[in-house]
Length: 628
Image (cartoon, rainbow, N blue to C red; front, side, top):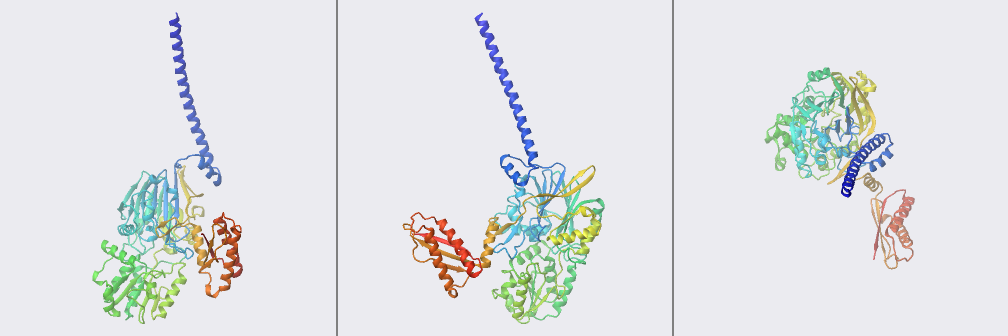
């Protein structure tokens, strides 16, 4: 009987254990479901919070990359508030394609900066989403950032024209951090599947460099076209004209969104053909007996081809100057985009023994760049060329806004040294690479987009292009003039595409490149550089006895860019004594425990205020405290 009850008790105990296990499983399952619901609710709440609150939530709730099903997003990271730094994203359900990765050249208030690249903060953690990078053409404002960005983006596949591929590879050779790129060469007949949502085609367009393509992106929502830089040129040099019939056909099939170049949207009329420029320069060659020196962009390969042809026609030889000029000519000639007899090129020894009437010098620097060929010539720093009487200098490029004063100074120096100047305002020696107003309206009429987004220019140019779109019949509510980083969303609702310019903005601020540093120059550093450039700096070196806290001798003063010390002895001596007094007071009048930072801050603030009261200038004050 005892055994029977004992056995029954064991069975009951086992049943309880099994019941407990089952109950724990139920509880765990319920808890997991509760946590999931709780997380979902918090995630949804997060999207309705103001930005400052969202940042706090982000720190406390771990979230994964979230995408909105059925929505196509178009985001421009650079090129909507400036000319340059071009980079656009097209995103649909965890798939992204990138169009262009360019640089922007620094403005005059950015001392020491080499150039600026797009901010790719938004793409961090989404590298696997990137299904391809498409490059429209080979100018630096479209390819310059590739060596800096492709590594952090995990080196996605790249698609571009043959010449552009050569220029990209050459640029990557100069940057040791650039990964080995997987570049596929395309032409106007290529069709590429990128991920499951994008089918990309290419449309040849004309610009100031061969192998330029507009990008046709077929998406589940509709067709998006990105023109890249373009102009309508019916007789381009070393290139095929754009196929207007195909453009019209694409427009007939339906274009949902057109993203179009706006760089010359403020200029009326039609863009001049490159062939016409060649005819004008031909007439100039006829009337010149001395040396011809031509300043142009190294990337203007169509212009260079015409200059090579004219030099051969007039029995002249060419002396190429500038590393980028030589590199681009070498690449284009090797690929077959520049056609000339290599014997036409001169080397350094040849320039000295060739008659002036047989010389054409082609170099960079028509924008007044400090280290470019033309500036080195007028400064007397070039190894073989000096300006002399009888030389004709042709500025075969328009003035980039912001460079007017520098270029004027360059022209003044050339004239003082005996040179004659011909520029685009005197004769047609430059054809722009961007469509003017009538060309832009023609593109709009041929493609007939439902929605329109002007790109690649400053704001007032974008607005001018938007105005042209309204003139050809696109409703104002279907035109999106965005800022860098601002999101355009498109989705299909009841068989109709609905689009809007949202208030959502992703990081699109400047990333500065300075030497080997990328992104390590902040706005604060740039501000300090501007201060030093404007008002100079003054260094106050104070020596203090670490035991007594008293100053040893008088502080040393060093002035750079502020005042000339020999002519301002009274100001310097007064500053020296004031710094000594501040240091002694800051050290506590003999205290052994000396707070260096406290003394430095007092010197910086009080000396800065004193110098402003005496000079109305604010030099950067750099205090140095040495304890002995």
